[in-house]
Length: 273
Image (cartoon, rainbow, N blue to C red; front, top):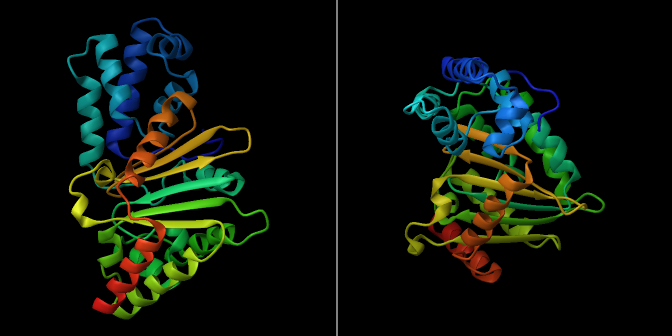
């Protein structure tokens, strides 16, 4: 998990952390003892109390069951979701970027927008500007620098899957969107890149809950970055918590067009612009 990160400063995370510490100490438990009882790592409990990781619903429900709180932690989890996104950069993102560079395989699903690793500069600028992100140019430069992994020596295998809506949603302008789609076609010709899209005709499927990236490493371990509508974000490295997201990605991709069909879809969308 993050080796160096700043805490969330919003009231939701602060309240959650204080409740967790208070209930744990009242029960006379160390972080490790609580983690062992719940089946999680003591590092995760520590991150929640230090506010360097955003709590998950699953852990919140487990805490409520364990402490018999009548829903205290689940209500705080909901409050965090309802609050505006108070952090300009997700605290675990620095760690994620480090691990992304080390990955030998990247499996990314994008629910709303083109994946950041495939965004052209004008598209990325429009996204960051609309989101009113601070330090826009610095954030933009970082996003562009990350794209070096597409063509670097010993580049990882990259699997990109996205909802058809991400292809059709005009970001910035129609001209920017056309160039973005052309960039997707160009990227799809790289030997280490596989690009697929889930058609609208699929109806509801698991990917509509949010975006997802699973990183694979040489030691056969995995890590997952998840994002729900750009609001709730987490970077997960615990093996027992990552596996469901690896399965989820494969399930989502099962709804997608094949590579050639996706390229045909992109060309069709470009003609409609």
